[in-house]
Length: 256
Image (cartoon, rainbow, N blue to C red; front, side):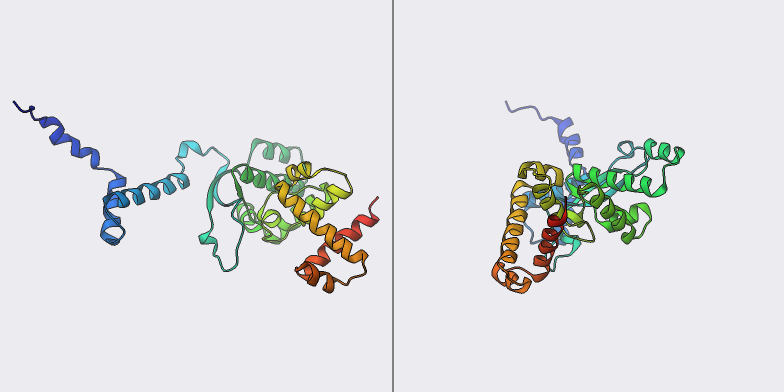
């Protein structure tokens, strides 16, 4: 005898196929019929939902004072002729306002100092989530001009000798204290090793060694009496970059 038909499964199992993934796969098949068969359409639908789920957070995961914002992945620096829409975006949850911010206001902390603390916190939180914010991101979040953001953070970097992890310093997008200066200062004025510098400046050890090596080459060319233009030609780099390193070298010579 044959197996007894499972009429319950026959009638109700199709309800399992009523889901968003299948709806997306069906729409993909309609609008892009040449994209592939059922498995390819299903895979595309799952990938779309993965992105959506990463970028849409339920209300119970966002607390009072927090905001969701898009950052650029820390390992995706800008390239020529590439739009921001083509970069790797990372959804971030940032503490826009905290009890500490309110307490600082109650303690009559000067506005500029409070703002600096907030900006630094936002940048560090984004970096902890593998992303970077630009000066314009911070300006939009805090209702400021990007030039004000750049001024506040660059002053902080110069005064403390530390880098704030943002696109201006790690991706060279916008205005920020040059990481070359801080890296060279930590090596030649403070005597720190490459691994210590890498940790303190949010760079890899390879990147630190690359900056220090370029600085050494520019300084050697200067000691040989070469002009910036000649140095740039020899090292196959821009005159502007050479002048940056020469300014750092001059600053290190007069530093105590």
